[in-house]
Length: 149
Image (cartoon, rainbow, N blue to C red; front, side, top):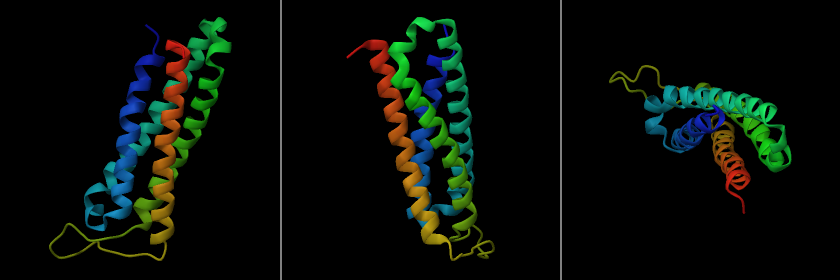
């Protein structure tokens, strides 16, 4: 069995989970102390899984060139998803740095606010929604290529 259909399931699970974590991180300040590192880890894991899925898809297409006309749209959507996932890593890292919030410590140590809070929230929300949309588009075009209309 080719690697591509196996790896895309990691993208389909990790991507929306990372996007939901990003939305919660952006809009629920009291959870930020808990979600900061999971947000960054999920964003990086999604990007890595996406890179592996794209590489495996390219290998699959090289092994089966007759599939090229069928998967052309899926290939374009996969490239867009790869770029969006890499961008989401940057946005998640920026938000993890820029968005302060409460501290988990009783002393309050580590709580901070920056002037970049609102732009970081907006970028993170747009990044999260865009990530889910591009995952949907790539998945739908892949399913159409495999299963037909």
